[in-house]
Image (cartoon, rainbow, N blue to C red; front, side):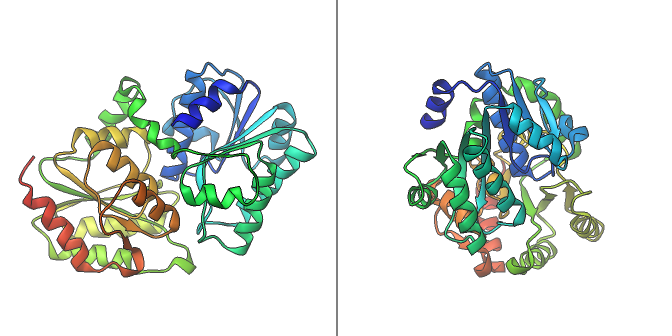
Length: 352
């Protein structure tokens, strides 16, 4: 991650406000924040404020470096933090893609105001801007791109799209590629808790579900249940990558699977996100991953766990290209034989 390392050395980042959709319990967002906060801490940056949706839950998902927290819903508090800090960092994420929404538009507008009216430095680090975004996403990306003092793009499509707006763009990777460099010693308690909640005793498929928006509707969850029902001899962990309080309907669904299918374990996301990387690395000989989430695919790859190359958006397609994945599958084209073939190949490798 050459560009990010150069960035950290080049800029005085004291008085920095970190803005993102952190604190909502989404695995990818929490992972990005954990890596970014660690990088800032290791660069000996002390005066940092982090916007966070639920500050009371911060220590569930993150190490505490003593950085200040401001509740994202406290608009006055966020505005005061913008005025008080010289630097604003948006730390990663495919914000300008298929998941574009009004909140991201308002964030982009806020960045534009911060740069041109409040005279702040605006940095977009490890971000994504994709052809799959909506017209509102393109307007939002234009505002954010014009506002940015510097952009570190996480893939070639993002680089090309932002270069149409500003020359202040360099190419690097997603922040999560830094995971192998983080000290595992800091996360042993988190790993132990995850190990206690999920029992890996042999070959196991780790499968994640995802909440899709109405315009992304597909039959992924139904196919997963059909696969589970037809493979009772294969151990399966089904996980939500959000807390069950955020996705109660999803949790009720996987609870019903646990009751119906004796070979299924379930879990939701309520731990430091680095723990999943360490868990995958610990059990990599006995795990294979199936799921659509960008950051879980990346974590599996970094940990040496085989994964089904499944894509629901351009951002995942770009990642699979970086990972040199063989024959990526668009989620709309996914069929039961894809799942069966992947599982068969994994089990044919023999016990770990």
